Amino acid sequence: MQVRCTQENFSKGLQVVSRVATTKSSLPILANVLLQTEDGQLKLSATDLELGVTTWIGAKVTNDGSITLPARLLVDFVANNNDQTLSIDLRDNEAVINSDRHKAVLKGLNASDFPLIPKVESKEKITIKAKILRQSLQEVGFAAALDDARPVLNGIYFKIDTDALILAATDSYRLAEKRISYKGKEVGKSVIIPARTVNELIRILPDTETEVSLVFTDNQLLLLFDSTQVVSRLIEGTFPDYTQIIPKQATTTATVDRSELANAVKMANFFARDSAHNVRFKITPPTGLAINAVSAAIGQNTATVPAQVSGDELEIAFNANYILDAINALKSETIRLEFSGLAAPGVFNSTDDDNYLSLVMPLRVDAP
Image (cartoon, rainbow, N blue to C red):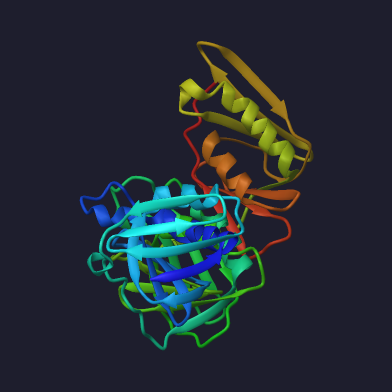
C-alpha cells in the first residue's frame, strides 16, 4: 500500500474512529485501527466487537493494501505532526509514515485478522438532521442507567412512531424523553441503543444540517452521515412502559431562570453531600421558591430563586445531582417546573420546547 494524504484529513478521520479501539480486550488487534484502500480513498475502521465505526478520507492511492496499526500511537503521531502532507508505505507488517520533517515506523498486525464489521441491509430507514439528533441524544442520554442491574436501562430507547421518533432513557430515578420529526416511512419499530454508542454519536455527529440515515434490523443499527458509518449492536429486551409515571396534570407550577436555579441547587448541594444530596424545594405562590439543604455536621444553606408560581404550596425533596443533570440538559433561558404532590415526580422542561420532558423522582421529606 502506498498512500498520500493531508495531515488534516488523516487526523480528522482518526479522531472519528480511534476512540472505539480498546486496549481492555484480550484481542490485541482491537487496540488497532484498520487502514485499507478502497475506491481510491483511505478507509479507517475501529471496533470493540459491539460498536464499529468506519470513515473514508480523500487520498492519492498509488498501490492498494491494508494493515492495522496501534490506535493511540497513530493518533498521537498524526495529530502532533505539523507537516501538511503524509505518505504511508507498507513493508510487511510495518507502516512507514513520512512527512517533510518526520519519519515513523509503526509495527502493525495483519489486516486479515481484523474482525469483520457487520453489513447492515434493510429497507427500514429514516433520515434526521445531524445537529437535531446530536442535541436530542444529549438531552436524554444523561438519564440512562450506569449499572448493569437491568441491561435494558443501559441504553436509549428509540421508537419510530407515526408522527415522531421518540427517544427516552431512565434509570428508575429519573427519566428524559424527546420527540423529533423524521423523514421516511414509519416502520413501527422500537429498539434500545447502548449508551456507549450514544456517547460516541454525540462526539462524532457534526453540529450541522447534514442528514443522517438510520437503518434498523432486529439486532443491529446502522447510521450513515457524510463519509462515516456507525454499526452498533442493539440491547435485547423490553423497555419499561415509562409513560405510566408521567403526571397528567400539575398542581404546582413554577417558571424560573435556568442559570439562577442551577446556581441555587449547586450551592445547596455543597451542604448536602453527606445526606445523599438531599435538597428541599419550598414553593409558595405567587413568587416563592426556596432551596434548602441541612447537614448535621457542617451547617445549612438556603437560597431563594425569583419565580412565577401558581397552584398549591408545596415542600418536596430531590437528589441535587439529578436536578442539576436535568437542568443542564435544558437549553432555554427559562424553564418550567411542574409538581403533582409529594409522591409524584417533578417535571423539568424548557418553556419553549413542548417535545421534551425530564422527570426526577422525589425523596422522602422528613419533619424538620
